[in-house]
Image (cartoon, rainbow, N blue to C red; front, side, top):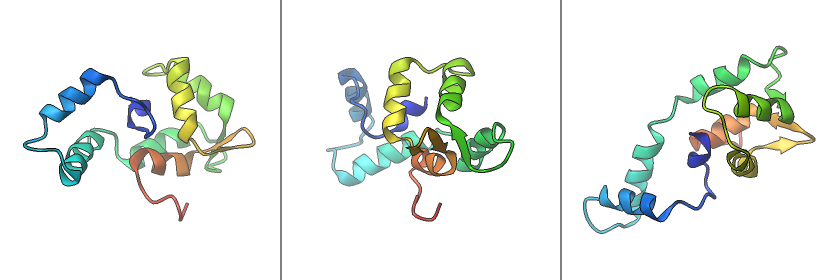
Length: 116
């Protein structure tokens, strides 16, 4: 689910131990990047996430009201809990009650957000 991909969460101890078991040897930076890359490859492609947001953006402005996105996340598909929303909002590009979903999609996928 989305919040588990956003940097800034504190993982459970048992989750960390399970991830460490996947490392073939001593955990170093290269091993970390490999494991992290494998985990993020399980998410939808950037174009799929962007298309999902665009379905709710009648004006194709690249922005949606914060409360509307929050309502969608809490009531459609894999329903987010209030804590998951809180964690997600820590990383979401929200300004004046508006979510920039194009930039948010890039944040989710770990892409360059400078040229959005």
